Structures are given as C-alpha cells and as structure tokens.
Length: 360
Image 1 (cartoon, one colour):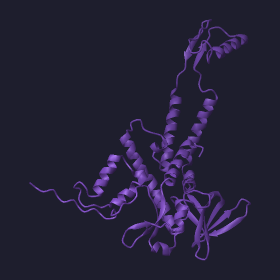
Image 2 (image 1 turned 120 degrees about the vertical axis):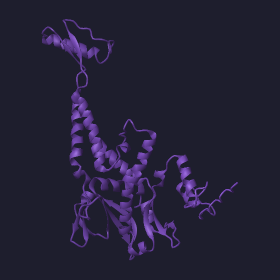
Image 3 (image 1 turned 90 degrees about the horizontal axis):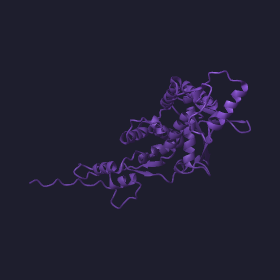
C-alpha cells in the first residue's frame, strides 16, 4: 500500500463498492420486487453491521482485504434458537487460518491475547477473490510482486536521487588550479548568490578563465520517468483498474471518451465485484428457506451509470414507449426510482402505447 499506484487502485475499488447502496430484496409472486426492510440482514448490510459501525466503512475495509489478500473474513454474530443475525464483525486476515478437511472448512482465529478459537464455516462469512482451489482466494500482491517491486525500486531510486540533491544545474570549469582557500571562497560565493540574494537569477560573473556549462536532463533520467509511467500501467493491469480511474490519463483522451471509460469501469471492473459479494452473501448470510422464499442481496449501481441529462432523458423516453418508440418496458415509478424520486399514484403500471398519428 506504500506504492501510490497500489493504494490508488485499492481505494478506487473499495470506494466503488462502499458508496453503492446494497439492500435485501424480496421477489414477489407477481414478478415484482420489494425491499425487505424488516429482515435483520438488510439493516446490517445497508446501514449498521455492528453497533457504532457504518456500512460504508465495513464494505470499504472488506474490499481492502479482498483486493490485497484475496480473502475477507466476517464473524456472524447470531443469537437465539433461530440463529438470527445481530452483527457482522470483520476479522483481520492475518489472524485467520483456514483448514479444509475435505468436506467442511474451519477457521482458527487468533485473538489479541494470543489465544486461538476455532469457528465452524457456519459462523464465518468467507468472501473470496479469484481462486485456484475454490476455497481460498489468490493473493494478488504475491502474484503481482514483480510489478509492484519494480515500482518500489523506481520510487526508492528517485527518492535517493532527489535526497542527494538530484543533478547539478551546471559545471564551472576553471583554467587555473584552485587552492583550498580559493575553492572555499568560490563555494561560499555561489551559496550566497545562486540560491537567493540580490543576484538571484542573474548571470554568474567569474574570472580566471572560468566557463559555465549548464546541465540538462539526460536520456537515463528520461528513461526512468518512462519506466515509472509503465509501472503504473502494469500495476493497474494486475489489479484490474483502468489507469484513468487513478488519475493517470492519456493526453489524447476527450471528455466523451473519459465518460465512456467511467461507464466501462462500472461495467467491467466494479460489476464483477458486486456479483461476487452478492452471491457470497446470499449463500452465507441467508438460509436456504429464505432464498427459496425469494430473498436476495443486491447492489444498486444505477447512480454510477448515469450519463448526461440528455442521454438519460432519451433512454427514459424509449423505456416509457413515448414519442413513437413502441411498447413501454418500464413503469413511471421505476424511472422515478432510478432518479431517486418518490413514486406517484398509478405509476406502477406500464404506459399504454401511443396511438399512431392519422394518415393524410
């Protein structure tokens, strides 16, 4: 995380998942759906996973664990005979050791006092990133260690270069041999006039056949800059983030192309994470009976998908079947919900097709 590109990539992914509303829905027999606000899981995921904890911070940290280590572990605080969920508590991945006996998983969790407690897989919500064996996520940092390591080496080299004063601005060549006393005098004179003072920024005036040769950026310096830019792209590839989303933009990018990249970020980068978390939550946090009854967890990224006002207006016009666009496939209330507006009376019905204009 001390590599700026890695930190930026993880932060973009974590913010993308944390800022999108997540709710528990119930699928109705009529084919519609409603928010299951009475279900305890809805409050835990949508607002407060544990007393004094926010859903945003919970999901943000969850993504840091998932992206960096490939796994996230959440203790399920359950009470009563019906094992009702009361809280969700994140566990640091470094404290958890997973054991697979071939049929079930168990989790050995180390506490602050060093004691080990073993939990059954029914007590732990285990989220996995891309996996090779199906029960443990792959460590993205280990897989991308060479790309990240080269980025660290380049940053350290550049830091040492700057700490050492970087390169000199120029060279004074003196025809005669300088005595130690004369050298100290000249060095003191340069310290007084070059950085500041009444002659700051003005030409140097020296004697004894002295010539001044300015220094410019070398090809080696330029190559280091190009290497650092390349490592930004390499780390972005490894973590699956578009470079534009971390502030690394192509100078040829336009506003229109940038907008399409933002939409691509939602579709190709964030949506797989949404689906991964949704399905994991359904399986681990809802019972088989609840899933059979139509309950499921869903993110709502519509706010991130909004384009310009004119584009949204055209889309909604077609969806409502207005303007001669054929049969409607969205209700007015569904459109209003996408715009964060309250429903209206009669807005749950599909609009009737507009009659064709009379022919002459």
